[in-house]
Length: 589
Ligand code: NOJ
Ligand code: CA
Image (cartoon, rainbow, N blue to C red; front, top):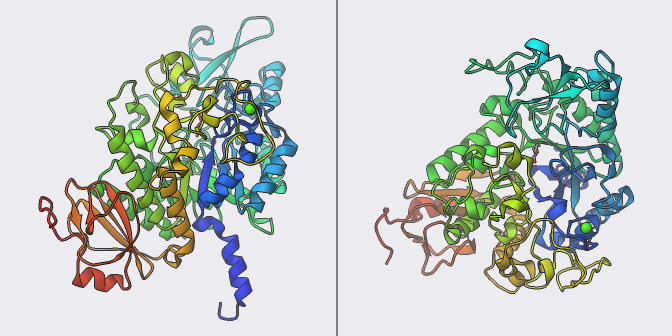
């Protein structure tokens, strides 16, 4: 608005921090252990806030820290209003949120509307109250089918494998009703037709927003509403959008509109981030309309293979889809459910799919690391929100863990076929040597601060074993290596903050010299080039190299490399001196 004063503009930009933030995902169990029991916790995280500040992240998304039996890494909540004693307590969570903010870091907490823990008081009450009770109405209890009700009420399959139904046992020991769980049996699904369920979640949002949480990440956001008729899926090959029995039902939008009203009621409006996996771009974008969810994870980008054409298409579609609803795009390379980029990009099949995970997949980690570096700079150069999963800034590979160490229900419910997600959840290495590479000794090395010292010799083993060679990937080690993955990330995030070209959404594709090259401009003077090809790419003009994922010698961009350039006038640069002249096959001079 023409009449707006400069300070008003500044403050509005600050309130819109979520439009181009860098959000770092913390899996607290594996980030840093402050009390030496081998399990990451809030004390450990607090002691490492300076690390996150120096990395220049704008926010942390902390995966569930609430009281939980931990049947699915905390995605089975027994009480949203208390912190699991494994991690600390509520007072410490409040301190953490406040301290993070003092470091310029906002906190996003995780909310799971689809389910709670089977230890949640509501579910215990539902079991105790029996069929037909109001307590059971908060969930999906049904009689079984077939003789004696021995068959599950529907043929639905859980995303963790097996049926989505588990049968209860009556007080007298006879088989009882079944209850629905799209995930593990320890995660009963809630019934969003029930008013208690709606009210309770809005209260939980307020509970955390009142404690300073800047936003919530909405777990499995496309799943909570079910078709009350509970139809079978057998024989149905496709659905009219909005009519699938439990995915992306139209009624979800009302729920999130109500959540948005809760979020908007704060002086600094709180932010909603959705985990929603959907194939149809328009259905996905519908969640991001101005009165619904602010942003959602870009899984098309995350799962795409390392291929220029595919990524060009994904980026183009992402930007189109989001601009249609005025929402910022997000760029996500991995999270706590996904094979680490260094591993995924070092395999023959670089696309990610849950179905394709298997033990012993051949992997070239050197190649994967090279590509992960290039991918990191590609993602960081795109307009919108950047997500970074803990440990990716260190280039940690997916750990191949011994079977006896695995804990993930996804592994067990696949009958041991799926390796599960433990491999991307191994505790971080902070120091080059020492017990657990500093994971359990947050203040015993030069990279930490804070009062939570434990002695190396008394700390318990980390909850998942770290590979023996992870000292070389530790924070302390990488701080000493000028070209480390960690320092590449620090440089990238520093430039993302300081370069005016990265501050708004201005994005323009540039003509690339070969189909295996992506090139685009940000603002007036920054260019990002990614060489996916197998041949070197020569830069013909002397542009300033801002940052590169691999050494650029004599203006040559090698394969699997991203470079950020500054050039005074990107249009002239492209029209008079195209980037990368040699066709594939030609060698630069
Ligand atoms: C998605 C979460 O990211 C994952 O870790 C969890 O197992 C499921 N939702 C169920 O809550
Ligand atoms: Ca601990």
